[in-house]
Image (cartoon, rainbow, N blue to C red):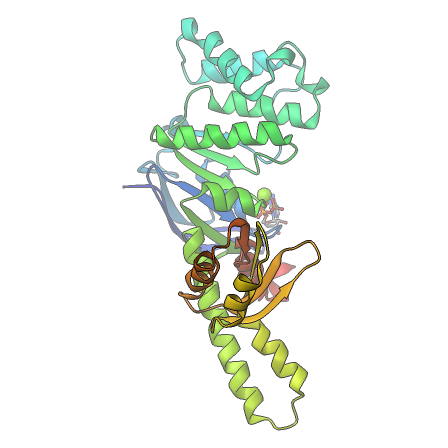
Length: 347
Ligand SMILES: Nc1ncnc2c1ncn2[C@@H]1O[C@H](COP(=O)(O)OP(=O)(O)OP(=O)(O)O)[C@@H](O)[C@H]1O
Ligand SMILES: [Mg+2]
């Protein structure tokens, strides 16, 4: 079953279409990452799915309940950490969480200990009796998390939850998201932090000007980018070879595009190892940096290249201390998927 299903979900503000016929499925018990540039329609989508605003047209179900016909059932299932903290400023951190717990009918005997456990987890217990108006930005974010999690929602919406959090708290929140997911909760995470999305999410949707422009696993999106790069490179190469007045350096630049960088640090750079690498047909260039790192260029699209290079080193009794290869990142996918913006759509 799907935790979320939308069918042609649309939101028009006056005559501006913020979300445009969105069709989206988020399977139960998964972590879904929603990416998109500023103004893409992510928060608007979340607001419709959490019954804060009504869609202009289209349909959606959350946990099997229709957002238009059964908004109360939808609200009971979900938790929401909004992009703009929406706590009562003249109540304390504790009072805000208690209010939430009472709204969801949490057993009064269990209520305060549950809240305090969460406060300890995100490290805000020391400020539990402070008014929200007196908190720092990160402290407000932590207080908002506690209030949203107190009823252990089946489906949790997090709209840029780690903005303003210090690195330690950020990691605690990532662990918490994973733990909730292990316990059967579905998470919808809006974020501009590509590393966060890549690490946490099962599936990623990229929204641009109100439309879903990509949907796959993080690895699937990166593989698709590699494939499209490959096609672009081979098209450019054949175009270049057809044009006689193209300079050699341009051809070299394009050739380089089809090479992947690989770099390692060896315990010692013996001649045997370097010679073996020079004779490896997968190695297109080799350079030894002054810090001792061996920097290679190998074919981007040859699945055997990395293995073959490792074999050359290991068979020459080389000891690898560290190794990196440069792969496309989710950020590359994001930039590519959102670069073709129709300027008329952005008014
Ligand atoms: N209440 C509103 N009235 C009119 N236009 C709105 C309203 N709320 C949002 N919009 C517009 O809808 C578009 C989508 O906004 P939304 O907040 O969903 O973007 P977002 O993807 O969450 O962006 P960000 O990454 O900056 O949070 C924007 O162009 C915004 O100006
Ligand atoms: Mg937003």
